[in-house]
Length: 243
Image (tube, rainbow, N blue to C red):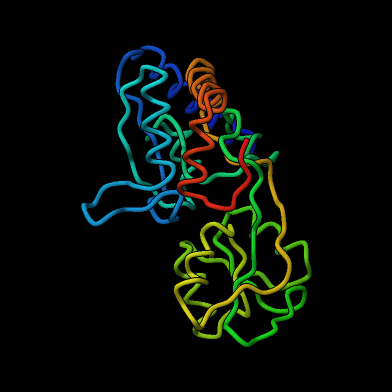
């Protein structure tokens, strides 16, 4: 284990040095592209959503040239550490556990409610039933502490399918993701109470890339100061808390 951690640290340091040496080069932003309205792939095959608009504006304010890279959620942190991209902007909540592996900018959303979605007309046992959640999320960690049986999936769409096909009694996810599904599908409805988890969403940065972290944090703060971040939250995440 010690050797593995040492190798990982060396890899992260190497990736960070590569960024520093290539100052002025393109900064790669890693996202999932499968979690609307935060991030998704539009009909033109491009990354879209709240975080696409936010990320482009942050790059402009930080005077950085940025390109977008998509990556599966379950390997998004390891591939940041290994240097496949330079920052994560993917609806990732700031948690102590993640902060042990990577650094975070200041948050660009307030802690947002998570909610349970189930088949309409059912009353699932949220503390003793089977609850679906996307793997490696704060919602999955929350379910493990409730006494319910956690059923993890690689993608958010699979969690919804599990509810529909009877594998799971309900799904726990960000309410902003579930809200359109509840509004557009008569067979799905919210159940139980909302829960607040995590410390808001921030950009994930390698621990060695302090300059990049400071640039993005300063850009986030400038958007908070002039109200433009609140305008984006109201546009893409209606009902979410603003700054």
